[in-house]
Length: 331
Image (cartoon, rainbow, N blue to C red):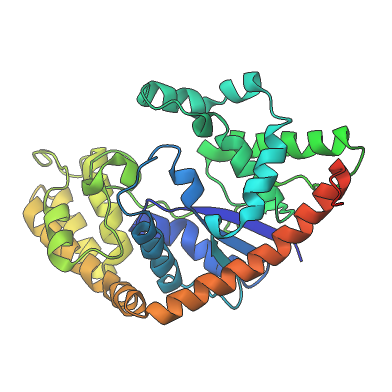
């Protein structure tokens, strides 16, 4: 069975875009592949070196992914820092990663421009840690977005370089993987592109958002002054709202507001109120699961410990062989 590895940011709550995009794919993947899903608390320190509540963030992410359908009996879900073998492989790979190639990383350049006062070594070697996350389980498939494809290419470079240096075909080549034929893209509320936390809290509807929070966010969504001609092409901001409506509302509701828009009788306030209530209704079962699981401390501990044991079993086998290949021997 092929191995899939994917990281989960420890600083990000799940929003509708995450859930209907990547996470629903994860839930399907766990039935057909050996899946390792890890909460990337090490990675979070590159941009948030002094987190206010790192453990609380990790717990929230663990809760939400379990609520979304990740089954700890089918997949291995674990916290990155619970597997010290990752740090050890990160060290070995760093010895064969060159400063020049790391400095050419597009992500590194972008982060330097955005945060010139926090250009730390961890930020520079972020691709090496990502490679360690993947190679520690000898994964061949990695679900990544376009923004991570260069890092995945670097993971192949570091793995192949290790194989070459030690004349051993040890690490397989990992490649980008998308389980679904077409990813679902949920638009945001800012009138621009897809839903995402990086675009600001108000752009995204989170699975844990209470109804009043959802109503406020939707009512603040960007629109225009309304159509002036029948069947007028919608601007992006308005099209986003209709796309959301089509996703969470009934077909009759969608057709009702589509007809009002095409006849120049649309009232965006009414559309937003309907959209908010439909999102609340669609999101209610998930919010209830999140609240239930977050209160079950013993279950969360059990899941985290079980995941760490399973991940360390795989990781320790890799590290033992890596040590032997390099030449480390105990006296």
